[in-house]
Length: 170
Image 1: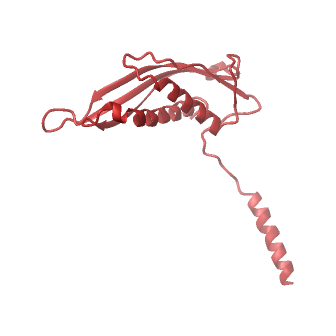
Image 2 (image 1 turned 90 degrees about the vertical axis):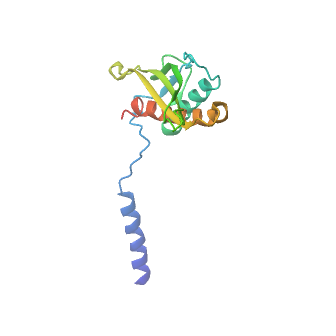
Image 3 (image 1 turned 90 degrees about the horizontal axis):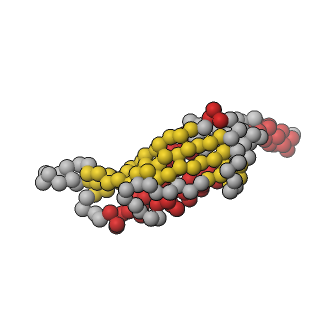
């Protein structure tokens, strides 16, 4: 009798677990029966101030996010179901907090990207939008000392913003 109770309990627990709804919070709301492929064009730097590794860093962050959060296959074809293209239009430094000596104690690095999202299956969902993200750093630090880490963080933020506004459809 005890054995039968244990077996029935295991079956009941297993059955109940299969009825629990599961949600994924990766942001992607893609119908994979319609959308199967995505392509990316280069995002050239068109900003007045240029940091050469920025283009590759940004493109990799964006592609990695799509790869990790969707089942879309990346192809090199402009006739893909979805397409992301654009340019890096801004790489700016601006003083922020002013200290007692009237000099800036914080500097802000802002990166701006113009993105054209092309939905070849439903052109009404296509967008042309500009995204910006920034990070502040102490003015006592040289940009060259913090630039790699700041750009990495900003590119992650930009990729997240772009993903949510286009493929994630938030």
